[in-house]
Image (cartoon, rainbow, N blue to C red):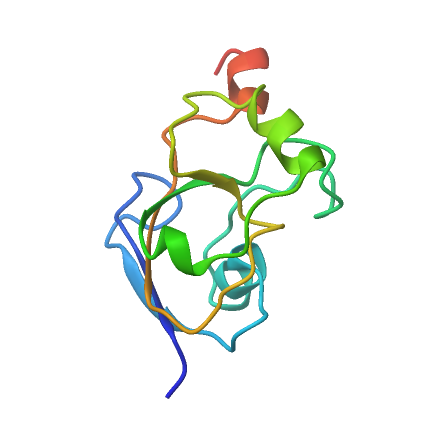
Length: 113
């Protein structure tokens, strides 16, 4: 069976929350986009911004560790927490994940919505 990703409700992106299935090796961002959950990805998933920042509320330890580039960017992310990852870099392993999409991204903050 494929791992499931549970997206917790987010006011704008998925108000009801969502449960999606994804193959191991798929990034969290790609799995979300493939299922109509429009996680922002301003740098086109090239690990050059923090707009796809998510919190991995369950299953964090099943993910491969973040590399230096991702860590450097995460330091700049809005609302950084110990379970923060860039969803374009974090690949699903074999465990279910519970993902929370932050209320804001740094882009939204800088555009002062």
